[in-house]
Length: 613
Ligand SMILES: Nc1nc2c(ncn2[C@@H]2O[C@H](COP(=O)(O)OP(=O)(O)OP(=O)(O)O)[C@@H](O)[C@H]2O)c(=O)[nH]1
Image (cartoon, rainbow, N blue to C red; front, top):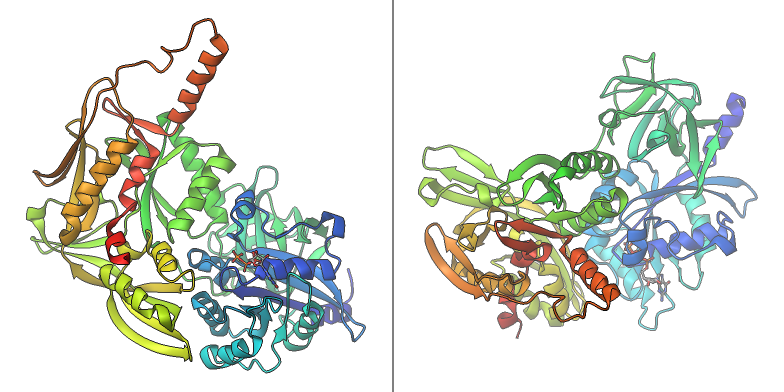
């Protein structure tokens, strides 16, 4: 191995940075250009959003997971630098990934769209970086757009974020303009890591994933010391000892290395089979180093919403448990515990950071673990004060006690930050008011944009608030929020009965003022969603014993294949097959078949349409 002064020299040439931005401001495209310019990826292998390696990320055009790559850059001063670039997601549901990435870095490149300017997530993400004492390199991207106004945006970065943007790099990630200037600024402005190379190993686990062959593969940032194949390591929290089988970096494909040293960002495999040993935020040290002070891990994330995940085939319960355990490694914000439902059997109550997160988890479970799942409607956590002076938390609406036992129910509120051109302030306020928002403040960002702050019930914003906000502001509003206080609200549980039987997984909680309306809406949409049977199915909504809405699904008589001549077995088989596939995501509840969509019917509210107009 190289001698100490060589290692020290190498360390001085390392630059670790994340790219942070509001969603769609061009982080992933900028990362692509950086990969190209540093010849990390050959032109012929280049594809758009290369670091978004999950199919799901490419299909949706969003970054879900952080991604760390090593690049080599020869600067204008003639020296060779090692960059560790961590691309991060922009969506609020994944800000946990951002905070973990930042902990592995000395600097952050802040990308701001030259036409849109500073948006809600720009602020949220850059504040995370400022809190971590990172050096921030501002970049004004998309200068090729006709609507680009870099000087206005420069001023916004100074006035709203409070950073010196006088030498912010002007880029077009799309056209490849300004990227080499950015690389030079990264070299000049972001400090090299300075952890002791000759101290005992201390590394932070900032991500991990399960690999069938290598066991758990850890993404680590070495703070002190070195690690190589054959070393015995200890994971501090779990106190588990392993022998390192491989270390390396992603560039972007994995490349094995002889060693990783203080300042490096790379991966480590040690045949770790016990998933719970390898938690994100834990410290890795050498096996014989027993008095190490663990690195400051991460703030625990509290899920914002909960929903039930059930296998459509009850026999797959254990497969689902195993899949959730493996996925949790790669998604540290996911929580789950077993629950059961009369209607759906055995499954898990899962906690998510938001609906996009929930959607992504469901899709990853189905794709990566080959499961068919039913998800119940998401719910926030309510705090219920009971008449016997005790307090309980309710994450599943069907667990809400009987009204006679309840003194009061409190629900979580968020502090929301909405940035919007001033002409749309009226529309934003109308929407927020309708969603039971409490106005806080309004500040001008510049001559024609404002930052409006509201306290809003979380349950009102997790579903479709953002879509409604976008549509009532022609896409111009951006939103960020953090959990605030619990407040007492007049809430009731609404139960749904199908064919006379209450279906626990369809119960939901609503504000009393909207209960009647929601009852009507939901019975009407269930009527459309639930397939007819050869008997009439009453669909009812009830508060306690009182039925508040009712409709009927008419009986259906004909067999779907009865019209087809038996002489065409092919067609008949195809039709039956189609029918079978359609059934995959259905659950038989009593004599009624309930499709996945029905469990989400509660999310579809038409209530704003009146206020939108
Ligand atoms: N005109 C123009 N478009 C750009 C530029 N940079 C990125 N885009 C486009 O902006 C869109 C969003 O770019 P992404 O790189 O996916 O944005 P992102 O910030 O990584 O988004 P998330 O990962 O979802 O947070 C894409 O359609 C890009 O092609 C630019 O410099 N000019």
